[in-house]
Length: 402
Ligand SMILES: *Cc1c(COP(=O)(O)O)cnc(C)c1O
Ligand SMILES: [Zn+2]
Image (cartoon, rainbow, N blue to C red):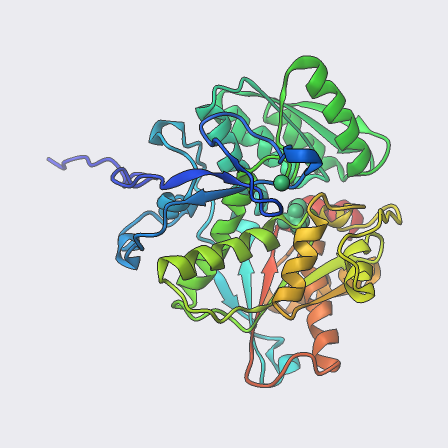
């Protein structure tokens, strides 16, 4: 007789969250994390809020040994208290792939992709949404809404379905059909909006206030950031705790960029890494390049910039809510900001598919063009290690590519 064994659990059952509270990174006000919070409301401050953990005692990296290979392996620095509330489809712990057949174009620079395309619903949005939906479940939410350029909507629809929570998704009409189909298939209510994600945001906000729904718009809710920061933990762990010299990141609302940076700071406090930081590069679409302009004009906030349709719908964010925080990280890290046209993204996407066997999202493809440009400008140096963060799969975008 063959004994039957259950598979290994998705979540480590021994670990506990070390969350203390939320804090405003701009004015320092502290907020209770055991009740619903959105953004800072102290004396007109409207900053995003950051979760803080009790890291003072340090923590051994050995806790990670034998933990499941998904983002909840960093449970101590995740916000969910009760394991029963974790809504997981196995997101995270995505591979780091060396550049292979295009390596000759990189010269003596070591280039790697962190490839997020294998996440549930085909993008890294799964990380943020898994964390936000889990915490919403913990706090007793029954309807959750988001404006989206595409991928966040699909992820929210899927995780809400799994959590038994109702989802309402606001998406621009010009988004490829597959992004809409997946939302409907996962049982979400889809509202198509004539305009950009900013217009979706206004409508979502009005409906949410009217109906008492909980909104998880980018960085107006504290926990999507916590999900996305796990990319920073993974980058450190997968590079054996030696961070790359440069990280190139396609910036929409900036959650991933801010999350990765937050993870680095937390890991330094934990004693897991030293003070060395990668130079962080934000890549935008020419159509929405407000951060690039602000970076080069030395301003602390960005202007509303919307040049209309781009194949990289995840980058059509006319004014990121957390623009100040994004610009601060770019400057603190001695990073850069650069924008890419649709034609350049499409050429890069096809080149990578043909040679590397990866059909990546146009947002990710933009990084390859940006890499070549930064190399040509000698902003990147021989001997450096550069990580390109491919945020999603190309499959949902193909109606605008072939
Ligand atoms: C949402 C999205 C982005 C932008 O993400 P942020 O972390 O909000 O800047 C980039 N790429 C893809 C594929 C996306 O779906
Ligand atoms: Zn504040």
